[in-house]
Image 1 (spheres, rainbow, N blue to C red):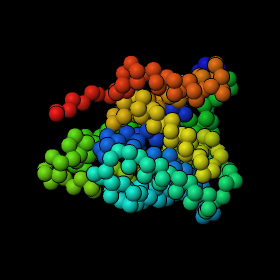
Image 2 (cartoon, rainbow, N blue to C red):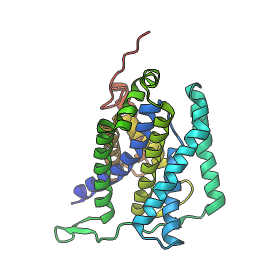
Image 3 (cartoon, rainbow, N blue to C red):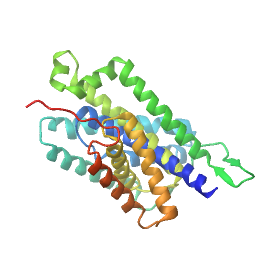
Image 4 (tube, rainbow, N blue to C red):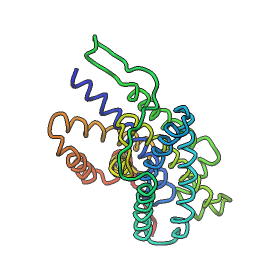
Length: 293
């Protein structure tokens, strides 16, 4: 039962990484930029839900919706103020700006909420599932996280393939200039992409803190880095790739902790990433794109 328990825990953790990675992969796939402040938007979403439940006594659903709304607006503001002026700038300038935004959000959180960890109450209200006479326990947070990951991935896939805005995102991803000539508002499309990615970050932050109930200004830093790793692992720019990369990363991390070493689990995760990129640089589901010169 230990193996099955680790398998379930790995899928649960991987589902959180997958939801975060979806935000990374959407922004990169459409805007061709790496938003390293994404992990800190996760932290903001978790704090918003915490404040809504602890100070405003809102029910969990209302707290999640509030966190999503705040993070959606935050994502749009970050894109407009920090990234939009750098649309034609080098990737290095955008990367440095993203790191600056990340530190800014962390320090604002420190000023508002302090550095002391907060105890986060789970947003899931039903009991854990007990199987095989109690030898296998599946927590309610695990069930909700896995279902949320599947629903979000399917929803994003349908959104990008069936809706007008989604088709516009795919067009911008292929060629911004050609999309603009066809009447697509590139700036609005990129803003919508940031809005969706930030809303997903809020959901991921709430689910992460529900499973691991400690909240502090650096909460989203390491999960954000690992989720970016998952996006690259699966093939950054691919929605199914983000989910696959997240699940595999979660499984590798949990099994590394269980059977090799807790201290070395992070090193093993990144070592596996290096091996995958050496064998397949575009990631598992990534595609090579030929460029005309």
